[in-house]
Amino acid sequence: MTSSVLLVDDSAVQAATRRMVLERAGYHVTVSLDANAALNLLSENGCQASYSLVITDHIMPALGGAEFVASLREICPDLPVLVLSGMAEAEEKYEGLGVEFRLKPCVPEDLIATVARLVDEPPMVKTA
Image (cartoon, rainbow, N blue to C red; front, side, top):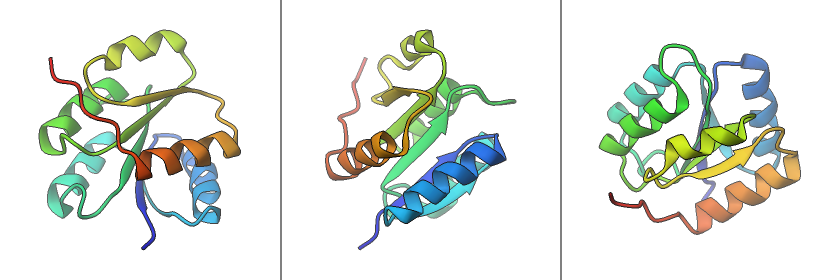
């Protein structure tokens, strides 16, 4: 069975590039350019029933990555999440949210390897 990934990024170019990389690696990818729309999608379709992993950008308008992940954890507490950011200091905003954090740029090989690991071995969500 092909793993499904929900990719959340307000940059259409970045989202299209990552989608292409992941689809070539064999993943089914759904793109959302809006974090609120992604939350609605997860609420409507169920978490793990629909997606094996969520990948999100850190800086997004309206609802930033950390706020998105905090809201996501309320409806999908065990769904693996990969956060991509160009700012190393952003990682501290995700403490206790059980995410994998990677700095951009993330070369295709590293993205694919990280996704494969997270889909096969989901991280445990840390409780406060």
